[in-house]
Length: 284
Image (tube, rainbow, N blue to C red; front, top):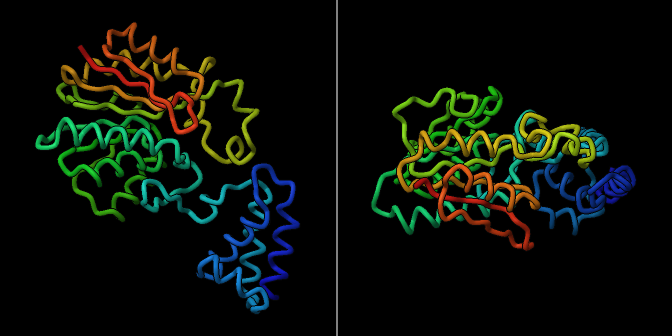
């Protein structure tokens, strides 16, 4: 079958699928199947595709038509310029989280340039936050924790691929496995923050495929901010920073939680769309 014919089929099957650009995704999927640049697909509409590749393309199109995320289909997601291995059972890294990581990297470079420090990442998913920071800040010893065995497994796969020696992962329900004498200059978390009742209304590729464990933040979406803000004080060094990613409408609420727990200089940082995205504060 010709490339043109395959793209026509892909476009037809994906038309009407929520949050999908049918022709753009058909071209992307075919380029991945053929292991070529997208530009090759654009300029070779008449090129013949063999039977095996045709079947593979049609199989993936059918999966995508059912809402399965592209990142799960190809087991990869680019984040901070790094291709991370991802699979069903771990949250797919979002571009918004790059703002959080970039802020932390800049903070470390400005305040700990010539100092070795420890950082704790709570809720690692694919390890994107932990590994991106460790890769860019060699003076930081990163510990990433998660309650999910799948998250630990996937993060270790990404660690092996990046061959970093300043990061490790540990299974833990929040601070449960953190030793009483372990202390950190920075604690970061992108916790579950979606209200339980809202999850059913999320787009299909999120609610049906991504792990609810990584999405559900309780009735008001603030469950983990309360828990982490309270307990993190036992593990932060004096003047240590606690920093979160938050939902777009949670800035005031999370700021109040942190302030009520005694954190100082608490502030909300907006993303490129002008929406609340980060809240941070410092232990007194």
